[in-house]
Every structure is written in C-alpha cells, then in structure tokens.
Length: 166
Image 1 (tube, helix red, strand yellow):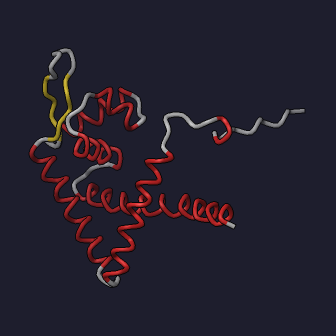
Image 2: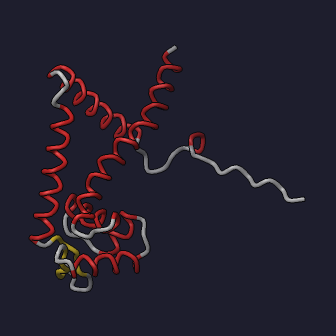
Image 3: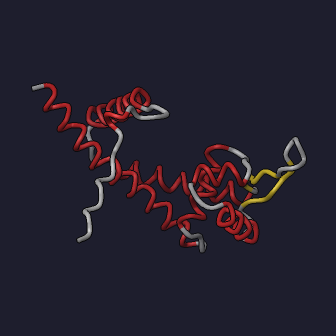
C-alpha cells in the first residue's frame, strides 16, 4: 500500500509543482512585460539577482542557451540600464551584474510577488498556512535528497526507438 501511495504522491507532485512554478514565473513575466522585457531577459536578470555577478559562460550554462544568444540578451539589458559589465579578477573575463536600476526592478518584482502570495494565503487558517510551509519545506528536503548529478541507468528516461520504415 505504501508503494502505491508514494507513487501517487510522486505523480501528483510531478504534475502540480511545475504548474505552481509556471504560475509564479508568469507573474514575473507579466511585470517584465510592463517595462518591455521578454521572458528570457527576465530569466537572465533573475539569475543574476539570485546568484550575483557572473560571466556570460555561467549564464550560458545556467540558462541552457547559446553563448551568442546570451551575449545579445545581455547587450539589450545593458541598453535598458538593468545590467552592466565589470572586470573580473583575472581581467580576461568580465562579469555581468545588476545595476542599481536592475536591483530596484528585481526588488519590486519580489515585493509584488510577495504581496500577491500574501493575498492568496489570507483566506487560509493559520494552521493551514503553517501546514503549507511545513509541506513546502518537506518538498525542498525531498528534492535535496533525491538530487543526484547523474541518475542511475534504471531510472534514466529513454527515448523509444523509431519504428523501421518499410
């Protein structure tokens, strides 16, 4: 019975968690759109906001985009005054960092998101809110526990072979 229940919870989590993340991201994309930012531009400044100044190569790996694409995005964000480049310690690389305007924008996004979440939680009882936070903490612990650099072959997704053409 526990195996079936665990599987059901895993299936529901795998279905519902991406939906919740998507809705939160759409809220930020909407805010970005109000000042003329595309979704990927928002991802760039969000990454820098959360992780600090970084190189183009780091952004390329983190966002899984071509280096030329990231370079163009950074250039557009520089033109909007949201990011700037500064010399790194080895002088051969430059780091992309948020400008004061970029930091203010991200703080505004965070504030709007928190206010929207607060309004969403308002109808819930204090006990329900506490349970929600405890469950969210559990999700983080579970994902930390199952995160592995490489999945064992038994659980790796596989692409089915193409049918032979006759």
